[in-house]
Image (cartoon, rainbow, N blue to C red; front, side, top):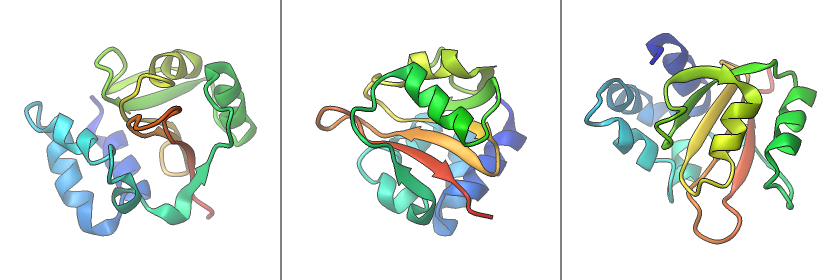
Length: 138
């Protein structure tokens, strides 16, 4: 896990009142899932809504989502904070991250440009899971 990248992601996209707590939880192997749980049902109060752009349905194709992020400036690699242990806390190819995260049913943030652009998928409550681009405007 790269604490510096995670700090940038949290400071960029999470609400101010939760940032320190989320950073603490992400840095603890015992509490990491607590931070990810905040992205389940309460993601609208955990993340900064002004940076959330919902991806229109149908939105379950990992290749199409990767292409959408590339159109917004993403490169070929990314960093994942995810419920999926295979990709969590790792830098990996963009498409690999999306193939694991899209449709998993649990939350993931795929950071494409650490302080500017990411993909977020919430916990699945109904089909499909809510999916968003997180994009800072400045």
